[in-house]
Image 1 (tube, rainbow, N blue to C red):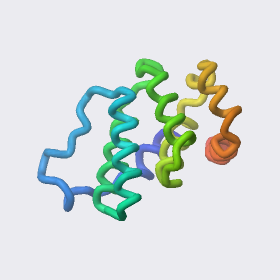
Image 2 (cartoon, rainbow, N blue to C red; image 1 turned 45 degrees about the vertical axis):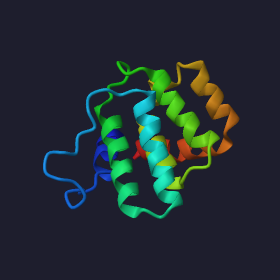
Image 3 (cartoon, rainbow, N blue to C red; image 1 turned 180 degrees about the vertical axis):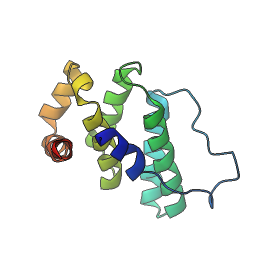
Image 4 (cartoon, rainbow, N blue to C red; image 1 turned 90 degrees about the vertical axis):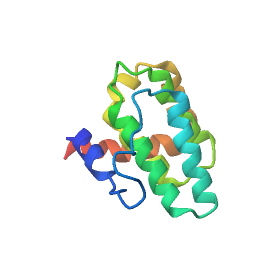
Length: 137
């Protein structure tokens, strides 16, 4: 249920921004891919480039949807979470990442480094609990 909500709620129609059949995130998911899309989003936010913000957030969303936990390298996901909470990033980016990790919390919680992130960043813990409450509905 929460995963279906994650897939649907972040989807955007970007057909006006891209040529037909050119919006592909590729098959390779990794820390560079995730953080690249996150950094592009932060840059676009900093300079007020709305279209680029939409495209980069959508590419990050698609990369996360394509990733299969636990087959994905979970350290890449932990690195993305660290990027979102150790750096000054827009709240919308954090909400996307928290929504994703709340869908995969059982697997991610087994990683000591992820547990340390939750312990170190109170705002991550607060956002995660808020997102997890959606699972109770």
